Structure formats: structure tokens, C-alpha cells
Length: 329
Image (tube, rainbow, N blue to C red; front, side, top):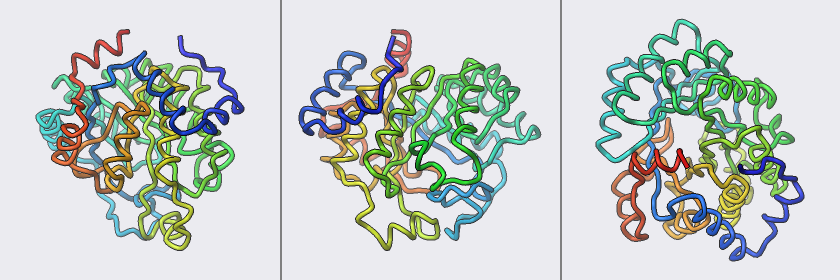
């Protein structure tokens, strides 16, 4: 049983280790809990884009952002299933669906549930991110067979209010509790490179590593500054606020050590990382990526580049069978 009683002092001490020592320790933990040569491929599809009433300072889909993202209606179920089939053909074992909502309306749930059942019938793991959930909505998703629900905490509890004001940190935790109660695996991480300090990153990892159960998946995003968003415009004027590559790898390594059984996913921002930085992240315990050309509204590295990188590094995509074995251990 992985420990959930990490202190901030312990996590801060990990961040402060010499870089090579930290990566070495993370690699040891990774090898003790996972197949170090396999990386899970996931695909993310925006099933409802733009028009979100939240004011997340990083998000191009917020109604307060002047990013040019147009609001759309919920996708047709058949189109979603077609995208899922294409993702499976490209090697993905998990299909993630995201909707730009503060919370789903009850009228949307029948279509959402049909998507879950349809994608799951293909043999893919299913994941959704729809905003805040009521206990009843979480129960419906669980009954439909949803494998994972993504609801990120985004940053440390102390910095949270500087990034989002339209919902509280505790409301995020409430949704995670509803998801766990419904028997759905939690996918929860956040974004680094939003101008935060290292102590904010310590607080971010601490909040995740001390949840009642560690998230099954921990996506770690590097901020993609989008013009027209609060943070995108701020970082355009203060580029030094951007997280450097070594500090990003440190964050991945500390997440791996403190949450040894979780899938640690390189998410947004990977398209601008060098191959060397990505290789260091894999050494430090990252074992999941989003593949494809797009993440919701942001660009992504693309299948061909990922295949070339895997070939160069001697990595292989994690098969669905291996993922089932890992989950059972």
C-alpha cells in the first residue's frame, strides 16, 4: 500500500536533491512498480469545445478569454466513436473525452453515457473530464463503465485562487470524492509553468500524494501560453516565469517517487519540449503520454514524431494486456 502521509518537508527535500540523484531514485521506484520500457498511449478528444463559464487563467476555452476559440455543441455520439476507433488503430489504449463545461447538465448525460459504453465496447480504457459532478452523475458514469474521471487540482491550494476564482479548491476535492465513491478511478494532476514558485510545486505534489487514494493517473502539464488568456498574455511579457526543463523533470521525478503506482503522464506542453527533455522525463518515471496532433485546442507532438522518438529511445507502446496486468498487481 503506497503511503499517503507525505509531509511538505519531505517533498521539498526531494525537490532539493542533486538532479542526478533525484532522477536515479525516481527511476528505481519506476522499475519497482512498472515496466520501464513501456509507455501508455492515450488520445484526448474535445467532445464539446469553448464557451466555458469558468475563468481559469490558462484556458483558451473560457468565456473570459479572447483566444478566438469558438463555442460548439456536444459532438454526435457516432462521430466520437469514429474518433475512438481511429485512436485505437493508431495504438492508443485509453480514449479521453473532454467537454468545456462547469458541470454537465442532466440533459447531456444520456449522450455522454452512450459514448462511454461505446468506447468501452471497443476494448479501450475510457476517461472523461466534464467539470464538477454531483454524486448522482458520478454514479451514472460508474454504472456505464467509465474507467477514469479526470478532474485536475491545477496547482497548490495556496496559489489556486490566483488562477481560478469561479470554483474553489475544495469543490475540486468534492468531485474527486464523488468519483471515488462511484468506483471510478481518479485521474488528477495539474499545470506547472504558470509563474509559480518551487514551494507551489511542492504544495501541488503534496495535495495529490496525500489524497485518500493516489490518483490512478497523474497528468503533469507544462503551460501552453495562449494569446488572449490571462496567463498567456502575462507570460508573453515576463518569459522568465516559464518553468525550465530541469525543474519540469524534477516535478515528474518527485511525482513518481511520492505516487509510485500511478501512471505519470506527460500532457500539454510536450510538443515544445526537446527530445532530450522528454527522454529525461521517461527516465524520471513518466510512463504515459497523449498522442495525436491535438490536445483539446492545443497542438500536440503527433503520432509520427512520437513513433520516431520511441524508436530512438528504445521505448514501446504499452499494450492493453500489459496495462491490465499492471492494474491488477
